[in-house]
Image (cartoon, rainbow, N blue to C red; front, side, top):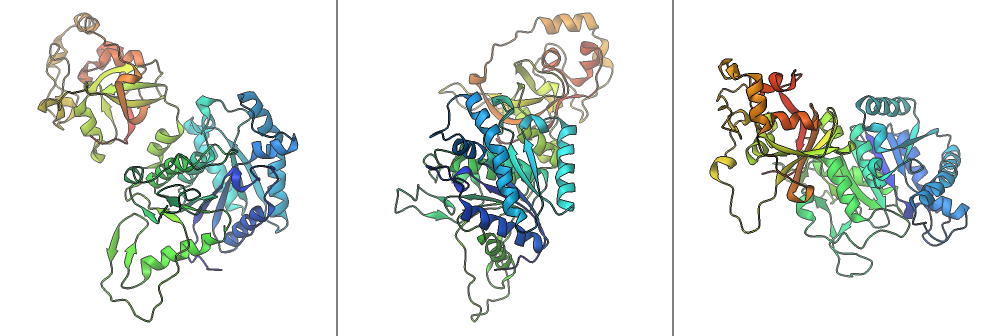
Length: 476
Protein backbone atom coordinates (compact mmCIF):
# COMPACT_ATOMS: atom_id res chain seq x y z
CA UNK A 1 0.00 0.00 0.00
CA UNK A 2 1.41 3.40 -1.02
CA UNK A 3 2.25 5.78 1.79
CA UNK A 4 0.89 9.32 1.60
CA UNK A 5 3.82 11.43 2.75
CA UNK A 6 2.25 14.67 3.94
CA UNK A 7 -0.51 14.57 6.58
CA UNK A 8 -3.66 16.24 5.31
CA UNK A 9 -7.40 16.49 5.83
CA UNK A 10 -9.43 14.12 3.66
CA UNK A 11 -13.20 13.98 3.23
CA UNK A 12 -14.56 10.73 1.77
CA UNK A 13 -18.12 10.53 0.49
CA UNK A 14 -19.84 7.18 0.00
CA UNK A 15 -23.14 6.97 -1.87
CA UNK A 16 -26.15 4.78 -1.12
CA UNK A 17 -25.41 2.45 -4.05
CA UNK A 18 -22.01 1.73 -2.45
CA UNK A 19 -23.53 0.99 0.97
CA UNK A 20 -26.59 -1.18 0.24
CA UNK A 21 -27.51 -3.46 -2.65
CA UNK A 22 -29.82 -1.74 -5.12
CA UNK A 23 -32.31 -4.63 -5.23
CA UNK A 24 -32.05 -6.51 -1.93
CA UNK A 25 -31.04 -3.51 0.23
CA UNK A 26 -28.56 -5.74 2.05
CA UNK A 27 -25.50 -3.87 3.38
CA UNK A 28 -22.48 -4.32 1.12
CA UNK A 29 -20.23 -5.49 3.93
CA UNK A 30 -17.16 -6.13 1.80
CA UNK A 31 -17.20 -2.54 0.48
CA UNK A 32 -17.91 -1.07 3.92
CA UNK A 33 -15.11 -3.11 5.50
CA UNK A 34 -12.66 -1.93 2.84
CA UNK A 35 -13.66 1.67 3.47
CA UNK A 36 -13.17 1.20 7.22
CA UNK A 37 -9.71 -0.34 6.73
CA UNK A 38 -8.74 2.49 4.38
CA UNK A 39 -9.90 5.19 6.80
CA UNK A 40 -8.08 3.57 9.72
CA UNK A 41 -4.85 3.24 7.70
CA UNK A 42 -5.12 6.89 6.67
CA UNK A 43 -5.52 7.79 10.33
CA UNK A 44 -2.45 5.71 11.21
CA UNK A 45 -0.45 7.76 8.71
CA UNK A 46 -1.43 10.95 10.50
CA UNK A 47 -4.27 12.14 8.30
CA UNK A 48 -7.54 13.59 9.52
CA UNK A 49 -10.49 11.83 7.88
CA UNK A 50 -14.19 12.68 7.68
CA UNK A 51 -16.64 10.18 6.20
CA UNK A 52 -19.86 11.41 4.57
CA UNK A 53 -22.22 8.45 4.45
CA UNK A 54 -25.52 8.12 2.64
CA UNK A 55 -27.74 5.06 3.07
CA UNK A 56 -30.21 5.79 5.90
CA UNK A 57 -33.27 5.36 3.68
CA UNK A 58 -31.77 2.27 2.00
CA UNK A 59 -31.14 0.64 5.37
CA UNK A 60 -34.65 1.65 6.46
CA UNK A 61 -36.11 -0.09 3.40
CA UNK A 62 -34.42 -3.33 4.43
CA UNK A 63 -35.60 -3.03 8.01
CA UNK A 64 -39.23 -2.53 6.94
CA UNK A 65 -38.99 -5.04 4.08
CA UNK A 66 -40.18 -2.45 1.55
CA UNK A 67 -39.32 -2.88 -2.16
CA UNK A 68 -38.72 0.77 -3.11
CA UNK A 69 -38.44 4.32 -1.82
CA UNK A 70 -41.79 5.93 -0.99
CA UNK A 71 -42.79 8.96 -3.01
CA UNK A 72 -44.05 11.11 -0.13
CA UNK A 73 -41.71 13.31 1.89
CA UNK A 74 -43.07 12.01 5.18
CA UNK A 75 -42.51 8.42 4.03
CA UNK A 76 -38.88 9.12 3.16
CA UNK A 77 -38.33 10.94 6.43
CA UNK A 78 -39.84 8.05 8.41
CA UNK A 79 -37.55 5.55 6.66
CA UNK A 80 -34.56 7.81 7.29
CA UNK A 81 -35.43 7.86 10.99
CA UNK A 82 -35.66 4.06 11.01
CA UNK A 83 -32.47 3.52 9.02
CA UNK A 84 -30.14 6.15 10.45
CA UNK A 85 -29.75 4.46 13.83
CA UNK A 86 -29.05 1.10 12.22
CA UNK A 87 -26.63 2.71 9.75
CA UNK A 88 -24.53 4.40 12.43
CA UNK A 89 -24.62 1.19 14.50
CA UNK A 90 -23.25 -0.68 11.47
CA UNK A 91 -20.41 1.83 11.06
CA UNK A 92 -19.68 1.78 14.79
CA UNK A 93 -19.50 -2.02 14.76
CA UNK A 94 -17.09 -2.10 11.81
CA UNK A 95 -14.84 0.70 13.08
CA UNK A 96 -15.01 -0.79 16.56
CA UNK A 97 -13.34 -3.97 15.29
CA UNK A 98 -10.25 -1.82 14.69
CA UNK A 99 -10.65 0.27 17.87
CA UNK A 100 -11.41 3.43 15.91
CA UNK A 101 -13.89 5.78 17.64
CA UNK A 102 -16.48 7.51 15.47
CA UNK A 103 -19.02 10.30 15.94
CA UNK A 104 -22.37 10.88 14.24
CA UNK A 105 -22.91 14.35 12.77
CA UNK A 106 -26.32 15.07 11.22
CA UNK A 107 -26.68 18.36 9.36
CA UNK A 108 -29.19 20.34 7.36
CA UNK A 109 -28.52 23.50 5.41
CA UNK A 110 -30.54 25.29 8.08
CA UNK A 111 -28.08 24.14 10.75
CA UNK A 112 -25.26 26.10 9.15
CA UNK A 113 -27.19 28.96 7.53
CA UNK A 114 -26.68 30.97 10.70
CA UNK A 115 -23.09 32.17 10.91
CA UNK A 116 -22.74 31.37 14.63
CA UNK A 117 -24.11 27.86 14.22
CA UNK A 118 -21.88 27.35 11.19
CA UNK A 119 -18.79 28.27 13.20
CA UNK A 120 -19.96 26.00 16.02
CA UNK A 121 -20.20 23.12 13.55
CA UNK A 122 -16.69 23.88 12.26
CA UNK A 123 -15.32 23.93 15.82
CA UNK A 124 -17.04 20.63 16.63
CA UNK A 125 -15.48 19.00 13.58
CA UNK A 126 -12.05 20.33 14.51
CA UNK A 127 -12.39 19.11 18.10
CA UNK A 128 -13.46 15.63 17.00
CA UNK A 129 -10.55 15.39 14.56
CA UNK A 130 -8.07 16.57 17.20
CA UNK A 131 -9.38 13.80 19.50
CA UNK A 132 -8.61 11.18 16.85
CA UNK A 133 -12.31 10.56 16.11
CA UNK A 134 -13.72 9.91 12.62
CA UNK A 135 -16.86 12.05 12.15
CA UNK A 136 -19.52 10.29 10.07
CA UNK A 137 -21.74 12.90 8.43
CA UNK A 138 -25.18 12.53 6.90
CA UNK A 139 -28.01 14.90 6.11
CA UNK A 140 -30.68 14.97 8.81
CA UNK A 141 -33.39 13.74 6.44
CA UNK A 142 -35.89 13.24 9.26
CA UNK A 143 -36.37 17.00 9.71
CA UNK A 144 -35.21 18.39 6.36
CA UNK A 145 -37.61 20.18 4.04
CA UNK A 146 -36.83 21.45 0.57
CA UNK A 147 -35.77 24.91 1.77
CA UNK A 148 -33.08 23.57 4.10
CA UNK A 149 -31.97 20.39 2.31
CA UNK A 150 -28.57 20.05 0.72
CA UNK A 151 -30.38 17.91 -1.84
CA UNK A 152 -27.83 15.13 -1.93
CA UNK A 153 -24.75 14.06 -0.01
CA UNK A 154 -22.43 15.04 -2.86
CA UNK A 155 -23.25 18.67 -2.07
CA UNK A 156 -23.08 17.99 1.68
CA UNK A 157 -19.60 16.48 1.31
CA UNK A 158 -18.45 19.49 -0.73
CA UNK A 159 -19.75 21.94 1.88
CA UNK A 160 -18.14 19.85 4.64
CA UNK A 161 -14.77 19.85 2.86
CA UNK A 162 -15.08 23.62 2.41
CA UNK A 163 -15.87 24.09 6.11
CA UNK A 164 -12.75 22.14 7.07
CA UNK A 165 -10.46 23.61 4.39
CA UNK A 166 -9.76 20.00 3.45
CA UNK A 167 -6.96 19.01 1.11
CA UNK A 168 -8.93 16.32 -0.71
CA UNK A 169 -12.55 15.38 -1.31
CA UNK A 170 -13.00 11.81 -2.60
CA UNK A 171 -16.38 11.06 -4.17
CA UNK A 172 -16.51 7.26 -4.15
CA UNK A 173 -19.15 5.90 -6.49
CA UNK A 174 -19.98 2.89 -8.64
CA UNK A 175 -17.87 4.14 -11.57
CA UNK A 176 -14.17 4.95 -11.45
CA UNK A 177 -14.33 8.48 -12.84
CA UNK A 178 -16.05 10.95 -15.13
CA UNK A 179 -16.74 9.67 -18.64
CA UNK A 180 -17.78 11.25 -21.92
CA UNK A 181 -20.84 8.94 -21.89
CA UNK A 182 -22.35 6.28 -19.65
CA UNK A 183 -19.67 3.55 -19.61
CA UNK A 184 -22.29 0.91 -18.73
CA UNK A 185 -24.06 1.48 -22.04
CA UNK A 186 -21.51 3.03 -24.39
CA UNK A 187 -18.39 0.90 -25.09
CA UNK A 188 -16.71 3.97 -26.64
CA UNK A 189 -17.07 6.11 -23.53
CA UNK A 190 -13.73 7.62 -22.53
CA UNK A 191 -12.61 8.54 -19.05
CA UNK A 192 -11.64 12.15 -18.46
CA UNK A 193 -8.53 12.14 -16.29
CA UNK A 194 -8.08 15.82 -15.35
CA UNK A 195 -10.66 18.61 -15.20
CA UNK A 196 -9.43 22.19 -14.82
CA UNK A 197 -12.68 23.87 -15.91
CA UNK A 198 -16.00 22.40 -14.83
CA UNK A 199 -17.93 24.87 -16.97
CA UNK A 200 -16.07 23.63 -20.06
CA UNK A 201 -16.38 19.94 -19.23
CA UNK A 202 -20.18 20.08 -18.87
CA UNK A 203 -20.56 20.34 -22.63
CA UNK A 204 -18.30 17.35 -23.23
CA UNK A 205 -19.85 14.73 -20.96
CA UNK A 206 -23.17 13.02 -20.40
CA UNK A 207 -24.45 13.41 -16.84
CA UNK A 208 -28.09 12.40 -17.17
CA UNK A 209 -27.94 8.60 -17.12
CA UNK A 210 -25.78 7.74 -14.15
CA UNK A 211 -27.07 7.09 -10.64
CA UNK A 212 -28.98 4.27 -8.95
CA UNK A 213 -32.65 3.96 -8.04
CA UNK A 214 -31.75 4.31 -4.36
CA UNK A 215 -29.56 7.38 -4.56
CA UNK A 216 -30.55 11.01 -5.11
CA UNK A 217 -27.47 11.96 -7.08
CA UNK A 218 -25.71 11.00 -10.26
CA UNK A 219 -22.79 12.48 -12.16
CA UNK A 220 -24.37 15.95 -12.41
CA UNK A 221 -24.48 16.29 -8.62
CA UNK A 222 -20.82 15.30 -8.52
CA UNK A 223 -19.96 18.10 -10.92
CA UNK A 224 -21.85 20.52 -8.68
CA UNK A 225 -19.97 19.17 -5.66
CA UNK A 226 -16.65 19.49 -7.47
CA UNK A 227 -17.51 23.08 -8.37
CA UNK A 228 -18.19 23.95 -4.73
CA UNK A 229 -15.16 22.14 -3.35
CA UNK A 230 -12.57 23.24 -5.91
CA UNK A 231 -13.81 26.83 -5.59
CA UNK A 232 -12.89 26.58 -1.90
CA UNK A 233 -9.43 25.20 -2.72
CA UNK A 234 -10.19 21.49 -2.23
CA UNK A 235 -8.84 19.03 -4.80
CA UNK A 236 -11.76 16.76 -5.74
CA UNK A 237 -11.50 13.20 -7.05
CA UNK A 238 -14.08 10.75 -8.40
CA UNK A 239 -13.05 7.12 -8.03
CA UNK A 240 -14.57 3.69 -7.48
CA UNK A 241 -15.99 2.63 -4.13
CA UNK A 242 -15.07 -0.96 -5.01
CA UNK A 243 -11.40 -0.08 -4.46
CA UNK A 244 -11.30 2.53 -1.68
CA UNK A 245 -7.67 1.64 -0.96
CA UNK A 246 -6.82 3.36 -4.26
CA UNK A 247 -7.01 6.65 -2.29
CA UNK A 248 -3.41 6.02 -1.20
CA UNK A 249 -2.07 5.43 -4.69
CA UNK A 250 -4.08 8.32 -6.19
CA UNK A 251 -2.59 10.85 -3.77
CA UNK A 252 0.86 9.32 -4.15
CA UNK A 253 0.55 9.46 -7.95
CA UNK A 254 -0.17 13.19 -7.94
CA UNK A 255 2.63 13.82 -5.44
CA UNK A 256 5.02 12.06 -7.84
CA UNK A 257 3.65 14.02 -10.80
CA UNK A 258 4.54 17.24 -9.01
CA UNK A 259 8.03 16.12 -8.02
CA UNK A 260 9.29 13.90 -10.88
CA UNK A 261 11.93 15.73 -12.98
CA UNK A 262 11.18 16.11 -16.67
CA UNK A 263 7.45 15.51 -16.41
CA UNK A 264 4.80 18.21 -16.49
CA UNK A 265 4.30 19.24 -12.90
CA UNK A 266 0.54 19.02 -12.53
CA UNK A 267 -0.18 21.17 -9.54
CA UNK A 268 -3.37 20.83 -7.59
CA UNK A 269 -4.20 24.40 -8.54
CA UNK A 270 -4.85 23.30 -12.10
CA UNK A 271 -1.77 24.79 -13.75
CA UNK A 272 0.91 22.71 -15.44
CA UNK A 273 4.48 23.75 -15.94
CA UNK A 274 7.33 21.59 -17.27
CA UNK A 275 10.40 21.23 -15.14
CA UNK A 276 13.71 22.19 -16.68
CA UNK A 277 15.58 19.10 -15.52
CA UNK A 278 15.41 16.26 -18.08
CA UNK A 279 13.74 13.02 -17.10
CA UNK A 280 15.81 10.00 -16.25
CA UNK A 281 15.06 7.35 -18.92
CA UNK A 282 15.56 4.66 -16.28
CA UNK A 283 12.80 6.09 -14.10
CA UNK A 284 9.59 4.15 -14.74
CA UNK A 285 6.40 6.06 -15.41
CA UNK A 286 4.24 5.80 -12.30
CA UNK A 287 1.04 3.79 -12.64
CA UNK A 288 -2.04 6.01 -12.74
CA UNK A 289 -4.97 4.50 -10.84
CA UNK A 290 -8.32 5.02 -12.61
CA UNK A 291 -9.90 8.27 -11.41
CA UNK A 292 -10.86 11.79 -12.42
CA UNK A 293 -9.24 14.70 -10.62
CA UNK A 294 -10.74 18.20 -10.48
CA UNK A 295 -7.94 20.67 -9.75
CA UNK A 296 -8.45 23.17 -6.94
CA UNK A 297 -8.89 26.86 -7.69
CA UNK A 298 -5.72 28.93 -7.86
CA UNK A 299 -7.52 31.68 -5.93
CA UNK A 300 -9.85 29.82 -3.54
CA UNK A 301 -12.92 31.53 -2.16
CA UNK A 302 -12.42 32.82 1.36
CA UNK A 303 -14.47 31.21 4.11
CA UNK A 304 -17.18 33.86 4.48
CA UNK A 305 -17.91 34.03 0.76
CA UNK A 306 -17.96 30.25 0.51
CA UNK A 307 -20.42 30.11 3.40
CA UNK A 308 -22.64 32.77 1.82
CA UNK A 309 -22.62 31.14 -1.58
CA UNK A 310 -23.13 27.49 -0.72
CA UNK A 311 -24.87 27.17 2.65
CA UNK A 312 -27.51 29.89 2.62
CA UNK A 313 -30.92 29.57 0.98
CA UNK A 314 -31.54 32.89 -0.83
CA UNK A 315 -34.55 34.81 0.48
CA UNK A 316 -34.87 37.08 -2.57
CA UNK A 317 -33.00 38.75 -5.40
CA UNK A 318 -31.30 42.09 -6.03
CA UNK A 319 -31.26 43.24 -9.67
CA UNK A 320 -28.08 45.04 -10.68
CA UNK A 321 -27.05 46.84 -13.86
CA UNK A 322 -24.34 45.64 -16.22
CA UNK A 323 -21.82 48.18 -14.92
CA UNK A 324 -22.22 46.89 -11.38
CA UNK A 325 -21.86 43.34 -12.68
CA UNK A 326 -18.55 44.25 -14.34
CA UNK A 327 -17.19 45.88 -11.19
CA UNK A 328 -18.29 43.09 -8.85
CA UNK A 329 -16.56 40.57 -11.09
CA UNK A 330 -13.20 42.08 -10.13
CA UNK A 331 -11.53 40.78 -6.99
CA UNK A 332 -10.60 44.32 -5.95
CA UNK A 333 -14.30 45.20 -5.66
CA UNK A 334 -14.39 43.36 -2.33
CA UNK A 335 -17.80 41.91 -3.24
CA UNK A 336 -19.64 45.04 -2.06
CA UNK A 337 -22.58 46.60 -3.89
CA UNK A 338 -23.59 50.26 -3.67
CA UNK A 339 -27.19 51.37 -4.09
CA UNK A 340 -26.33 53.23 -7.30
CA UNK A 341 -25.81 49.90 -9.08
CA UNK A 342 -29.22 48.49 -8.07
CA UNK A 343 -32.16 48.38 -10.49
CA UNK A 344 -34.66 46.67 -8.20
CA UNK A 345 -35.46 43.68 -6.02
CA UNK A 346 -37.51 40.50 -6.35
CA UNK A 347 -39.25 39.11 -3.29
CA UNK A 348 -39.24 40.25 0.33
CA UNK A 349 -36.20 39.66 2.52
CA UNK A 350 -34.73 40.95 5.76
CA UNK A 351 -31.32 42.46 6.38
CA UNK A 352 -28.71 39.79 7.03
CA UNK A 353 -30.35 37.25 4.72
CA UNK A 354 -28.73 35.77 1.64
CA UNK A 355 -29.87 37.17 -1.70
CA UNK A 356 -29.31 36.28 -5.32
CA UNK A 357 -27.50 38.85 -7.41
CA UNK A 358 -29.22 38.93 -10.80
CA UNK A 359 -29.14 40.83 -14.09
CA UNK A 360 -31.96 41.27 -16.59
CA UNK A 361 -32.10 38.96 -19.57
CA UNK A 362 -31.61 40.64 -22.91
CA UNK A 363 -34.72 40.67 -25.10
CA UNK A 364 -34.50 38.16 -27.94
CA UNK A 365 -32.96 39.65 -31.04
CA UNK A 366 -31.48 42.61 -29.21
CA UNK A 367 -27.89 43.58 -29.73
CA UNK A 368 -25.33 44.49 -27.15
CA UNK A 369 -26.10 46.89 -24.34
CA UNK A 370 -25.15 50.47 -25.07
CA UNK A 371 -21.51 51.32 -24.50
CA UNK A 372 -22.13 53.38 -21.37
CA UNK A 373 -23.89 50.50 -19.63
CA UNK A 374 -21.05 48.14 -20.41
CA UNK A 375 -18.20 50.40 -19.30
CA UNK A 376 -16.61 48.96 -16.13
CA UNK A 377 -16.45 52.32 -14.35
CA UNK A 378 -16.83 52.57 -10.57
CA UNK A 379 -20.34 52.04 -9.32
CA UNK A 380 -20.39 55.50 -7.75
CA UNK A 381 -20.21 57.11 -11.21
CA UNK A 382 -23.18 55.23 -12.66
CA UNK A 383 -26.34 57.01 -11.47
CA UNK A 384 -29.44 55.33 -12.84
CA UNK A 385 -31.72 58.22 -11.83
CA UNK A 386 -30.08 61.39 -13.22
CA UNK A 387 -33.17 63.47 -12.46
CA UNK A 388 -32.25 63.42 -8.78
CA UNK A 389 -28.56 64.26 -8.73
CA UNK A 390 -25.45 63.40 -10.67
CA UNK A 391 -23.25 61.10 -8.65
CA UNK A 392 -19.76 62.25 -7.87
CA UNK A 393 -16.82 60.96 -9.86
CA UNK A 394 -14.83 60.72 -6.67
CA UNK A 395 -13.57 57.27 -5.72
CA UNK A 396 -15.57 57.42 -2.47
CA UNK A 397 -19.34 57.16 -2.49
CA UNK A 398 -19.53 59.71 0.35
CA UNK A 399 -19.58 62.96 -1.64
CA UNK A 400 -19.64 66.62 -0.66
CA UNK A 401 -22.55 68.04 1.31
CA UNK A 402 -23.80 70.15 -1.59
CA UNK A 403 -26.15 67.47 -3.06
CA UNK A 404 -27.74 67.11 0.38
CA UNK A 405 -29.34 70.51 0.00
CA UNK A 406 -32.40 68.73 -1.42
CA UNK A 407 -34.86 68.39 1.45
CA UNK A 408 -35.73 65.00 2.83
CA UNK A 409 -39.37 65.53 1.88
CA UNK A 410 -38.63 66.44 -1.74
CA UNK A 411 -36.14 63.61 -2.04
CA UNK A 412 -38.68 61.13 -0.69
CA UNK A 413 -41.36 62.49 -3.04
CA UNK A 414 -39.00 62.15 -5.98
CA UNK A 415 -38.15 58.58 -5.02
CA UNK A 416 -41.81 57.72 -4.57
CA UNK A 417 -42.64 58.84 -8.10
CA UNK A 418 -40.06 56.57 -9.73
CA UNK A 419 -41.68 53.71 -11.62
CA UNK A 420 -41.23 50.23 -10.15
CA UNK A 421 -40.88 47.59 -12.85
CA UNK A 422 -42.65 44.28 -12.40
CA UNK A 423 -39.80 41.81 -12.74
CA UNK A 424 -39.98 38.09 -11.98
CA UNK A 425 -37.37 35.37 -11.69
CA UNK A 426 -38.13 34.41 -15.29
CA UNK A 427 -36.85 37.82 -16.47
CA UNK A 428 -33.42 37.60 -14.85
CA UNK A 429 -30.25 35.50 -14.71
CA UNK A 430 -28.50 34.73 -11.40
CA UNK A 431 -24.84 35.78 -11.53
CA UNK A 432 -23.91 35.50 -7.85
CA UNK A 433 -24.99 35.66 -4.21
CA UNK A 434 -24.36 37.86 -1.20
CA UNK A 435 -25.64 39.06 2.18
CA UNK A 436 -28.10 41.95 2.32
CA UNK A 437 -27.25 44.80 4.70
CA UNK A 438 -30.77 46.24 4.35
CA UNK A 439 -34.19 44.72 3.80
CA UNK A 440 -35.91 44.62 0.41
CA UNK A 441 -38.13 47.67 1.08
CA UNK A 442 -35.15 49.77 2.14
CA UNK A 443 -33.10 48.76 -0.90
CA UNK A 444 -36.01 49.78 -3.13
CA UNK A 445 -36.01 53.21 -1.50
CA UNK A 446 -32.37 53.86 -2.28
CA UNK A 447 -31.92 51.97 -5.55
CA UNK A 448 -29.98 53.91 -8.15
CA UNK A 449 -28.97 56.63 -5.67
CA UNK A 450 -25.67 57.79 -4.27
CA UNK A 451 -24.99 56.36 -0.82
CA UNK A 452 -25.00 59.91 0.60
CA UNK A 453 -28.79 59.87 0.58
CA UNK A 454 -29.23 56.70 2.60
CA UNK A 455 -29.38 58.41 6.04
CA UNK A 456 -32.07 60.80 4.74
CA UNK A 457 -34.25 58.12 3.17
CA UNK A 458 -33.77 55.34 5.71
CA UNK A 459 -33.24 57.35 8.88
CA UNK A 460 -29.89 55.64 9.42
CA UNK A 461 -27.03 54.10 7.46
CA UNK A 462 -25.16 51.24 9.08
CA UNK A 463 -23.25 50.68 5.86
CA UNK A 464 -22.88 52.49 2.56
CA UNK A 465 -23.20 49.09 0.85
CA UNK A 466 -26.60 47.49 0.33
CA UNK A 467 -25.16 43.98 -0.20
CA UNK A 468 -21.77 42.60 0.88
CA UNK A 469 -19.75 39.38 0.69
CA UNK A 470 -20.87 38.94 -2.90
CA UNK A 471 -19.43 36.12 -4.97
CA UNK A 472 -19.94 36.55 -8.70
CA UNK A 473 -20.08 33.15 -10.37
CA UNK A 474 -21.10 34.27 -13.87
CA UNK A 475 -18.63 36.80 -15.32
CA UNK A 476 -19.78 39.60 -17.67
